[in-house]
Image (cartoon, rainbow, N blue to C red; front, side, top):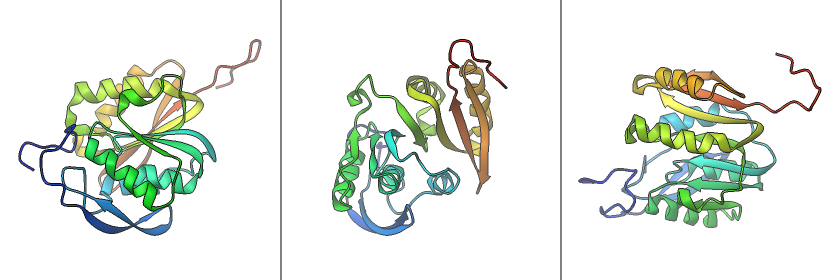
Length: 213
C-alpha cells in the first residue's frame, strides 16, 4: 500500500477487487472488498467481537457505523433491521464505494454510505456501532467521538470495540470523564484481546418526575 492507510481519503494503491464469503447477521453472503481499505480479506477480529457481543439493534430509526470500511457492521445492521436507515460513514472514498456496491448486491436499500460531512445535521441515532480507527491518533479519535456520541438519541447506546493493547482501558476512562453528564460508560464484554465499550445516553426525566438511580 506504500503510504496509503485505510483512513486515506483516496487510496492511490491498486484496488484489486476481490470477492469473499462472510457471515453477516447470521447469513452467509458474498461481498466485494479491495486493497486500500481495512481488513479486505475477512471480517477482522475486533468487528467479529463487536457483532457477537451487542444486542439486536432497534427495528427502526437511524443507525451509525463510524469508520465503516467495506461495510461488515453496516450490512449486518441493514440485514437485521430492514426498516432502519444505516449511515455508513468513512473518510475513505474507496470504502464507501464498496459499501454501496455490497448493499446493492444484497438488495439493501436502507444503507447510506457517505462522508462525515454528508450526514444531515438533524439526524440523531438510535444506535452507534463502531470499530473506530484507533491508529488515526488519540486527538483525531477523541475529536470523532466528541462529534458523534452527542448525536445519540435519548435512551440509546453507542457500542465501540477497541483492542486492549491499543488503549481500550484509557479510552474508557476518557469517555467516562468526557461524557459525564447524562451518559454512562461501561465495559460490556471482553474477548480475543478486545473490549466492547458501551456508552449510554440517558433520557431527561419529565418535569416533576423523580430520576431514580
